Image 1: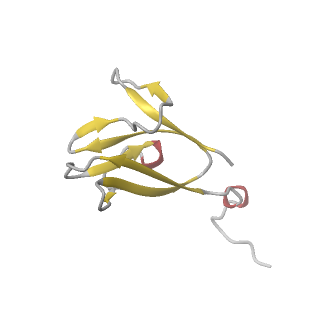
Image 2: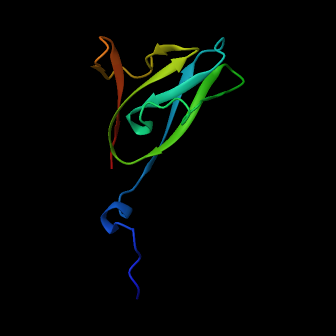
Length: 101
């Protein structure tokens, strides 16, 4: 059997998890989910608005600890559904997402 090149067997054994984050912001024009899992890049996880005004995004991440926030019409907002916070280097706080194995 030939060994596959470029595949790390230990890394391929890690079970990635599906996580859905939501934010109620019915009057928002654009909402982005940004955090450690996407290098804080707003182009990676734009959120979709549901009929009830809730914005929703499902991401797939490896188990671990991630900091994140929502960017709503150019302004940072924390997740009101998650009270797990930590200070950031800008003098505000980020939400913390813990994804377990």
